[in-house]
Length: 211
Image 1: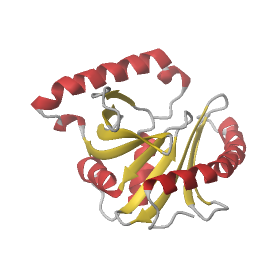
Image 2: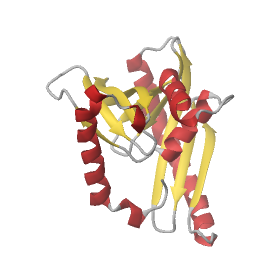
Image 3: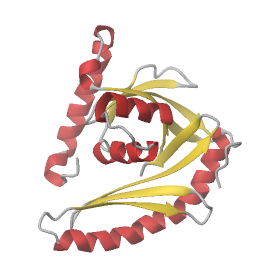
């Protein structure tokens, strides 16, 4: 179980120990939801579950399915001395950390909805921004690399570092596309190009209509 006194390495180890059971639960939910997708007129089913793992951690499982395709996002949420946090795991095994500050900026600068909990904000963020493409701007840096991601709703600024042998992306802040400053434009142009190439390569609009 994740507790507030844990450091980053201990949290990563705990999450990885928990992940196989969570993935098994996601696979179980996927079989149920696929039947819903097959029977629906739109051939698309989306659902988010709250799940308490055997190790007593609080997870969310977001599934988006068509009869032939599926997308799964699993994330654990917890409190530490810095407040609310979420940590998701990609299919490549990369961990993505979202702080309460990042989620507050997303709500303030895009959603603009009052009385949403940070967990509700996070659920909205991953629902609409699961597709992203990014650029690293100091690849020569060994300890911590700066990265910018483009998503449907805006731009996420963060860092990448290795914690306990795992790559961890830390999302620091969020801006909308119209908030880009002149001094940021060159970097953002690189991110936009990467995103467009990624989108065209995968032909995601033809494969899925999740976003």
